[in-house]
Image (cartoon, rainbow, N blue to C red; front, side):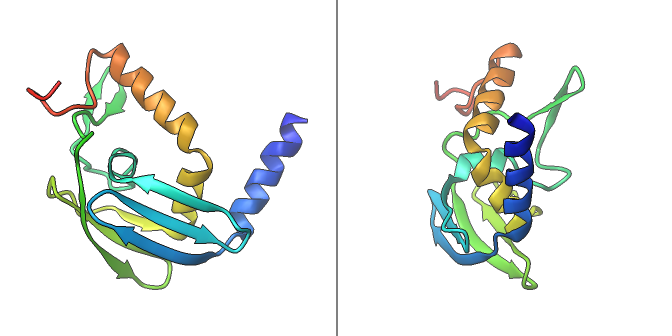
Length: 134
């Protein structure tokens, strides 16, 4: 049964096409796909899952961790070809290009990704809040 669900999710990711992209600065992005999936993705969630290599990441014991981004905001979005956007964040991060497929992946796995992120922060004694703002 689990294998069938994984196969279905993989097929959905491959066939769902973006129908709407809405930026609601500075808080979130909303994306809608042809299969009627609609995802509201917060600035913090998008920032910590940036596809950029740099992303102001700390490597702790081989794990890549971005902390202190609870209050980060999205300043703007720039189209990149017909396959995605570059999001510009108010912490000056602007090198990640988010493809439509990546938005779908993030939306489909939002709760698991966020739960794992919070577990990783706790494991290393880090916080979602910026330093001095707990």
